[in-house]
Image (cartoon, rainbow over the protein chains, first blue to last red):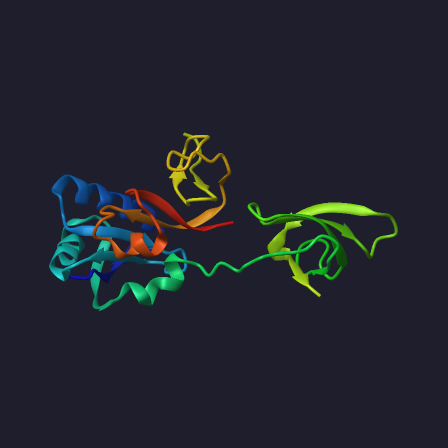
Length: 145
Length: 62
């Protein structure tokens, strides 16, 4: 049997604490709940992965700050974008000219000196300055041009 | 109490200086969203995330 995602309406601003108290309850009572998801974009809601709705409905009655169960259910594929953010393959070659798209150097052209793939950080030499200035900035701040 | 940080490699949340899951010390204090994996065997979310141990994981790490 595949697991389903149920939605709980909870008190806004307390999602993290509620998720932790539900997890404690699941552990002590041995409830068949497989995971609890709190997405920061979904304020006032928690996603509960379980097989059956009755376990989730029990949570909504016996847990502090849990308001109700939202009718309907989702599949794991529906929340794929939440749980697995699309990894943008980031790669810059040494010497490549790029544009800084955000931050204090926004709009400036720069040349890649080094690129750390693990940290996704690039050391760049800014081209629009009068003197040579090297800065290390996040790779997401750069756009290949 | 020490601030909770997320491992940039495996997303595990920890208050230690080293990630208890992968041993990495590349930890970020800037994270948002959380997944609590309770049953790795039955959880499809754990499979989708590539998680093999129960625990608390960050969704987004800055």
